[in-house]
Length: 561
Image 1: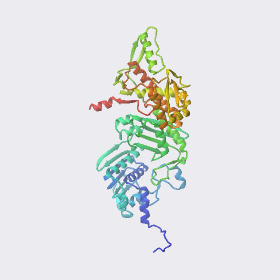
Image 2: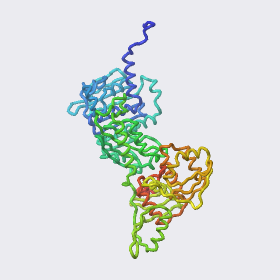
Image 3: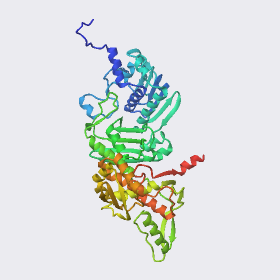
Image 4: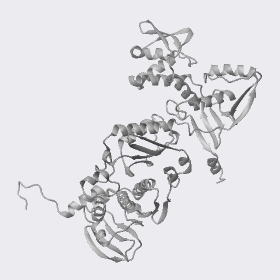
């Protein structure tokens, strides 16, 4: 009996064990993770996971790993019993998954557990059965080489925790996500997942991440994954990312691995999203990022379930991830290769086309013309749909280009790449505009940027200005265009990004519009110049400029495959 002044007690062992178990085992998926990681550490080449009712009723993991002796099997169920480390110094160079000696004791504390194991050279295996903290059976057991852990009635002795689990389908979705993560990173292991007795996922050994994904994702998504690798300052990064136009509504297929361990890290995630910029439109990229770094540069012991990792050089990690993803998204290696055919035209035709080229402001490149005739390759089967979308035949199928978004990207790149101020297009009849107070204040703070981009604006009197010149790309100007531009910039743009945003608005208002008819050569120049930009896949605002379709996709649509 405690006195009135005695309020602190030492909790009984049974209570302590259940609290510890909650730190490691928060839902069925965490049990699957711990058990499969143990199987991988045991050098298994085959791992089978069987789940009933979202793991609420049963989780069984079977492997063909090294197995354990009867003594090691008993010790594995004790707290802080591990084969992975021997002392404090080992924590800085851990290369295995399980090392705390927490997983099996924590699982045992909140379930009915049966574990059996057999060494390669042993005559027979050994079985231990536990009910919560109590060991109820220990005996020799005929078994195959490896270990089998059968976990039933999870949280049977902690009903409050079981009450907070989600539906069976939700819990299985978490289990599948864990299973996919471990399968992606451990590509030499054959993984099999059963749900309620039915095969859910079969992932045989594979060489690379993209090949591994073929067994997990739909073919169209896999075909549109971009691979990358980079290294700097003793840090190596590898992975795959989806193209912006293939972004999805959820984050289920985002995986980060550090030294082969699946982790969560905001530094890496933020670097990836920043590299995509505004091209995602509220969706999320698919990515798998693998980082290899010295164990002395990270701390993986910061979370009870080893879900998080800390970097001693977080800034270096951020820059390497950001640059790697950004460079991959800008790469032209994945641009579709157009089918080409050779055509000839006379000198007079070239002159007429030169005027069209100048009028549309596509390219300053001139066509080489021989004395008697010219020769050029143009895409075969190029045509325009509803005067808005350009269809082009490619080596593997076809692509569709949004002509307005494509021209926006071309003009924006021309502005950004400029080596000097844009030359103004002087108006024959200058435009007089009455500004509001806020518009006048905004213009006063940014007049130099407008001048840099080709505007020539003079103050007339009071809040009245005279627009004498506009950027060379702009086809038309009126009072509404200026008011709309100022209003948008005032409400949406900070001073730091003002130049780029004005450039985007100029490109948008100057680009050819949906509904404008283009000739064959104009479409050809548009596509050629789009492919020459730094980021041909998206317009400056992040919308896709093109989408691709393969013959394989078409054949599936027509039920040929």
